[in-house]
Image (tube, rainbow, N blue to C red; front, side):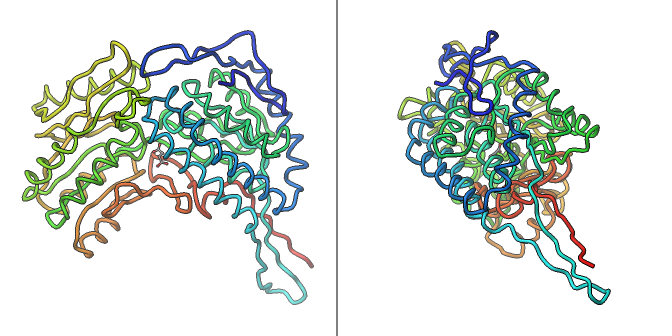
Length: 471
Ligand code: SIN
C-alpha cells in the first residue's frame, strides 16, 4: 500500500502520519501522511501550473490519456478491490463491482472529453456574430468519502480531467489507499505531473487552505449535509463553484400493485449494498397495508440469508461498518425505535469485539416519531412502516429536508409515474433498487446537495460558459 502524498508528480512521506485500520479486524493497515497547510498550498501551486498545459491539450490528447487510465484500472481491478476490502470492509465481490462501476465513469468521460461543444446564437444586430464556448473552470478541489473509495473519486476526477481542469484531491483518511493506487495508475497512464495531486490528512487543515485560495475555482464534495453546509459557507468568500453530494434518507415504497418478489429482491440490493453505508441506500420502507405481511415475510426470509463477516471471506455478503461511531449510531437508532414500540423481526445483534459487525436488522410497527424515520442511519437497519393511501405515503416520503434518492414499486404504470412525479428526489428508482449509472445524473434536491455528477450533466459542472460577441 502506498503511504505517500503526491504533489507535482513527486511522491513523499511526512513526519506526522495518520494510522489506517481494517474495520473487519481493527488491525493496523499502515500510515499515511498528515499533510500540513504548506503541503496544501504546494498542491495548489502544482495544479495551477499544470492547468496551463493540461487545458491547452487537444480534447483527443486528453481523451486518450483518460482512456489509458481506464484500461489500467481494468487491468488492476482485483488488486484495487483487495485494497478496498481491507480498508473499507465491503465484501471483495462488491469491491470488484465498485471498481468496475467507478471505472465506467472514467470510460464515459474519456469519450465525453471529445464532445464539449459550444454554439452560435442568431444576433439581433446585423453584422454581429454571437458565439458560446466552454472552458474548464480551473483548479478543482475534490474531497471524497470512505464509503465508495474508488467510485467517488473517478466520478469527480474523470469529468474534471476531461473538461481540462486539474485537481487537488483529499480522500477520506479512513480509506486513502484505494485513492493513492488509483492516482498512481493515472500517472502510469501518462496523465502529467501536477494534473492530479493527492494529500491525505486532516480535512480542516487541508480544505481550509484550498477554500481560502482564489486559484481553486471549484470544490466538489461528497459527504454529510453538515459538512456540505460548512463548505458552502467557506466557499462564499471566493465565490467558488460547488458540487455537493450530501446525505440522503431514501424512502422505499411498495404499493398493493407491486410485484412483491421483485420488490424484495430490489429492497435487498438497495438496503444492504455496502452494509447500508450509501447515501442512496434505502433508509425507510413504506408498505401498503394489504401487502404488508406478504412483503415483510419474504423480505425477512431474504435478509436471513445474508452472511455478515470479513469481506475477504468468500461467503460474506455484508462486511463490517466503518468504525465504532457508525456502530453506535445504528445501535442508537434500534434502541430508540424499540423504546417507542417497534418490534425486531430479525437481527439487532452487534458484535464489535473483533470488527465493527452489525447483523442486518428488520423492524416492524415503525412510526414517524422514531429517529430512524427522520435521520439517515447509514447501516444495515430496515424499518418497515405501513401506509393506506398513495397521498399519505407521498406526503410522508417527502416530509424530510433530504431529497437524494427514492424508490417506488408498482406494476401499474399510472401509479409508478405518479410516484415518480410527486416524489421530491433527484433520483427515483421505479421498480429499480440500483439506479446509479455513469451516463445518468446523480444528485439531490433540497439539503441533499447541489449539482449533478454523471453523464452530460456531470461535465457541465467543470465548465465555464464564455460568450463571445463579434462586432
Ligand atoms: C453513495 O450513495 O454514496 C454513492 C453510491 C452510488 O454512486 O450509487
